[in-house]
Image 1 (tube, rainbow, N blue to C red):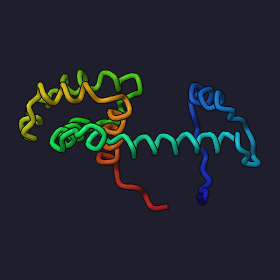
Image 2: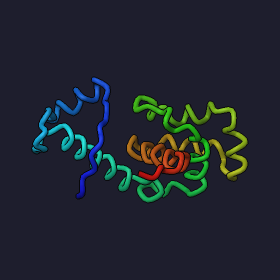
Image 3: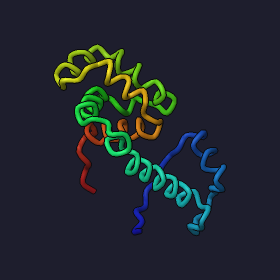
Length: 140
């Protein structure tokens, strides 16, 4: 895979996380260089997002998916610790009822189906919402 060179500043907690997998400063680009360990973990994350789409894994209906993407208009504000609470967070949004009605979704059935999703499936919904709502990429 071709490499692009960039500098990324990570919070200490993420540096410690990578360190648990052997990450260390290594300008030679060895197996355990921070860049390579980070790249491996981003690849794993991408695999989870690719393989855990609840429409495929659980038959999550398209209207539920579309409603979730619409409700998650600020997905970058969701943290890992929030993912287990996703049904409650979405239900508490002021626009929840109106958007559910617009998408023709029964709210009780939707919240039940959302609550049955695994953490990784909920993560996919957040990742897809971020793709949908992110500004367009800038040209290099």
